[in-house]
Image (tube, each protein chain N blue to C red):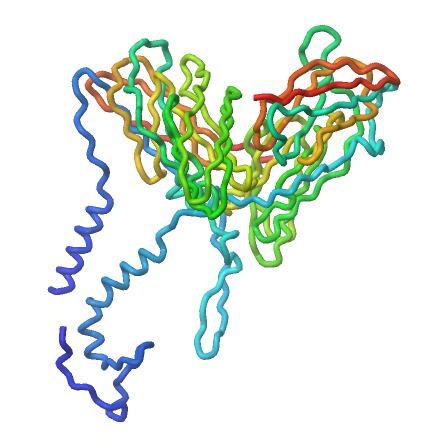
Amino acid sequence: MVPQSKTRNRNEAGAHLTCGVGVRFNRRMLKRSAWLLLVPLCVAVVIALAPGRPAAHEPTLMWIRANTAESGDWKWSDAEKGHLSGTLEFSTRRPNQPVVVYLLRLADEGDEAGEQGVHDVPERLEVSQLGARFTPAFAVLVRGQTVEFLNDERNEISHNVYFLGDIEADLGIFDRGESREYTFEKYGEISVHCSIHKRMDGRMFIAPNPAYALVPGDEIDFRIRDIPAGRYRLLTWQRQKRFRDANMVVEIKAEETAEVTVEMTR
Amino acid sequence: MRLAAVMTVALMLAACGTRGPVYPDPEPHEAQLVVQLHGEPREGVRRPTRRTVRDGYTTRLVTDEDGAAFERVDYNRIEDVVVMVWPLAIITTGVQASWTETLDIEFTDSGFSRMQYLGERTGHLRVHNRRTEDVTIFGHGAGDEFFEKLIPAGDSAVIDLPVVQAIPLDFGGTFELYCEEDENAGARLFVVGRDAQGWIGNSDEEAFFVHFITEWPVSVQVFAPRLPVWHGTAELERGARTTIQAHLSVNRLTED
């Protein structure tokens, strides 16, 4: 559409408007071409607002052991205790991934899990949500332990925390400066998410009792101390599973160190 | 007059945009199933706070939730949703012909291009490494099936999927996909079992299944990334189409 009116200079009634690229229009021209401008503008807005393919989830991976059995600063109440010493043996090259070795206490008879006993619970773990990121994004906990999720954002941003997996729960929505606690009464593996922000993800493994070791990616030996005497099922857990998880029965005797070789095969 | 014409065109365009998919009429010997997906936003979530910032002679609205980390979940369009349907009774007639196609997977600087994939139980993966360095792709099946493949930079490689030890009456299985060189990269591959049918798409679409030749009830599971699995059943009828609705939400989780 060709504008009918001639361009006037700015002194004539000040009717000219200048757009960003320096082209001058008068109001009449704008009025006439408004409909022509509206359609491409709407298309541009729709394209700009259309959701693109999101980048893959990039949780911050931080392996954290929220407590340590080796330090001996928290223990089972049982009197008679022994130790376990072992080596992981991989059928192919060792991936640079930590492996959790843990013991599940068995009932006096049979191969079923029994009572895990009364044990000290390590201090609570604080998880930051600053910058819409769980920090740490990965943690190994012990059943009975409490995790406190802090909304420590600097600005007025709300967060939510929910778990999926062996334990499923929703801790609600909370504003900056607030926090939510959760005490894990069961053991297992969970993924942690925020229902508001699509890239806020974390992962936690909750061991059934304090008898576990987190074997770093560049090590194969482990040692677990002060385990109440009894029969246990030795199990492994891998965040990114590359091998069949171990599953074997071990017996812990008072004042003795049991030695095991844990085969990680495919 | 001109305004009325423009509005009429706009209304016609809007009507075209909201028109649902057209499905073929069911044959007398077959049953059809449509699974309508509904993503529900988390209850109680407020919009991001906005404040006005003066910038020279102009003002603009800014939000504190700026940047990729603060991108919000779009419950109107949840991507990579997998729907699996399988009969609740043992039948010997396979409801889906064996697939021969190869599933193509892109591995880019951001990791796997999708959060979830759908393939066939005895099928193949062709992984395209778009990175400038070699990568090793791992897969772990729920029944302890493993595979591992080194893919040179900028190249592709075909992986024969190990056969998942499918449980009778189950949909097939899953593989967790990882990368040795990028510990943040991860995706899930669903594989369709002998008696099952699978669909993958976004939550603003409908999962359409056809060629069921059973009148047994079928089990339906919907797997949306980061959301609880939705379970349901549907009673199918020969020569008819059954429609069910699946709700994708965290609102039904217990709040502690």
